Length: 159
Image 1 (cartoon, rainbow, N blue to C red):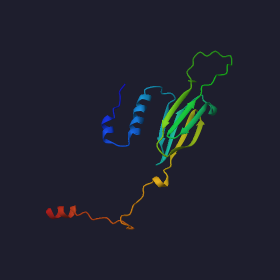
Image 2: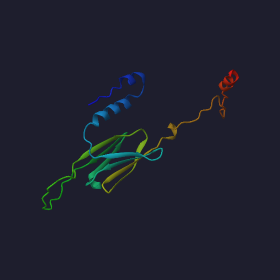
Image 3: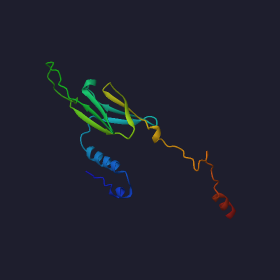
Image 4: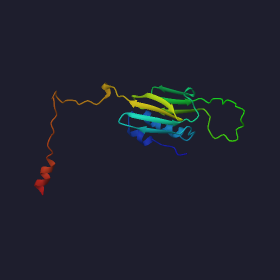
């Protein structure tokens, strides 16, 4: 198992401790169980989708919890009804699972849907107005004017 060492970056950055801790914990966690498989996609600037393959689970077997910056998806193992048939091969996984996803600030769950064995969770990032970038005028000036680049003229005169 390879270990990520962020020590050189930690020395030269300030305020990124949470990011480095998250990357190190993900590296440790990703070496374990890969069930159920999932995809993460992005559509548009602020829309994300997590799709988990949860064949055999019903909507009431799955619990989705969004808390702070953590999204947890749990599938509860259910007891199969005994219909008297003898199973010769068991290839469909019917085991409980828990998947955790670290969410960025201002990302919230918009919708969750289970169809055809796929659990689709739609996420959206909504940055508050107070956090969006703003143009700041200097000395109360209403508009900023571009300063012409004089380097091009000097290079042309030198040639």
